[in-house]
Length: 286
Image 1 (cartoon, rainbow, N blue to C red):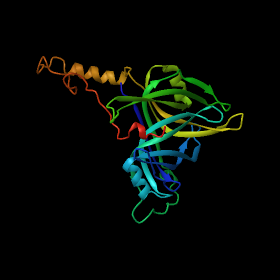
Image 2: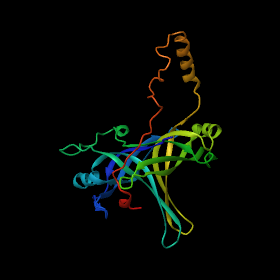
Image 3: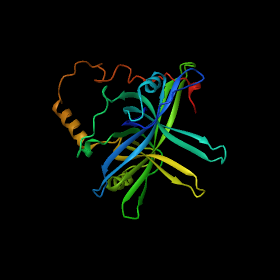
């Protein structure tokens, strides 16, 4: 079963773009995008801030970014979340960093430059930060209560990506593990209704937070702060009511063919979909 791992951000590049060349001759660059945000907490308080996202671009997209993107440029990025892991050479500790691997880029600045920000319009000056994933829950939800009485729940969701290696023709697969955080009443409902192994749709914003270890080392973790959760593969009473109503309405209607395939599904069942990638494995910097 296929899963979904998509993220969409609109933000501003913070530094000059440097395009590198891999040993295989592919262009690659990392953008640093700042995304201002504004949202209301469960208590109704309006919170503002900004998040920073590393965006990796490959091939012609990296070349275009190197040619046209400047510090302050506004960009729309669609891609997928990817976490790279490695072992620290000095301490031997396992380290990881989550980034966005870009699949589409739109340059948003007008040819004659950005317009001045209108006054008193803070609600429409917020940028976009949206992540959508469909995957399997990797651990049972953990519900906690903060010191100020708020309920917060954390769980893991795994998504899979498949692609065919162009050089070998082999089908390869990569699994991403997403940390999901849910607050308030939604957290309590999820804790009572979902469990490890079930399939879930999660929608929210991507957030990276930092802390220091007891040894004084800086660490970061990236999470999806969810505001929309859907449990998948279960009956929905409202939907089933409509299904049964339509079935009753069409009861007794003559069949057009006793051998007809189900509507919307091709003969032979659902075909396998293969996702291909232009990136060679030997060009990947991890």
